[in-house]
Length: 300
Image (cartoon, rainbow, N blue to C red):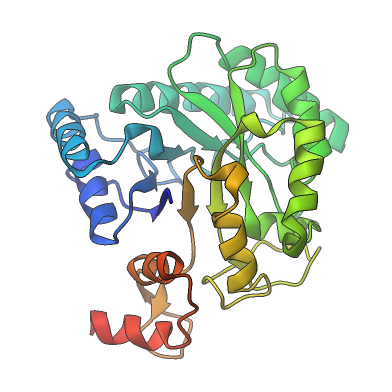
């Protein structure tokens, strides 16, 4: 089972991210190379990269199972302000170069929101931008995330993802499935086999490079995108476990992006990472009804 979670990219950069992942019992992880809401970035420090890669080798964790996530401020679908669109292209190119310095082979990208454009215009804007970015010889592949369809988000259906992929001249581009987003977009995750068969027919399973494993606080087709902890949402533990253990996706990294846990029942203050406990629960294959209390006790 290749499973991990989102981790921090702090002062010791990739090394710190690795150590956090290992503390959760993970053999995969995902990071931002800086805050996802702004452009502030520290220089990649190669001494930490080298130390991290050496430790990965010792721990049996492959760099192939380390994923980067592109910043939220990138929006390739909206071309209303050409300077903003060009900024998104430039900033994504910069993030790809940072990934290459780190040795990371995959960067997850939200396709973007069309805003005042039509859906067709938004998809065409994404395709145009990606054709300026994606190269056959790039060492870091962009993987498009399936979206919930909140607002004017593009990429909420497999057909929309297919349209983008077919419009990009290079085949050096993949897909990241997000279980919460798929549920909120209208795909029934309790019938995941049917979903995968449809995806394979339209796009091909070989394009799937990462799974974001999240439960959802919302009902099917709600288009809201609110993640829940594993087994504490509308997808349920058993459905999520089947997805994680699906034979056709056994070599694909699974990344948890579930919410932090508050120190009390008051959800306003989320302070504790749940990943150590969720990963243990998933590996055991049994739902822990006392997980939230266990997390609070552990971090007390």
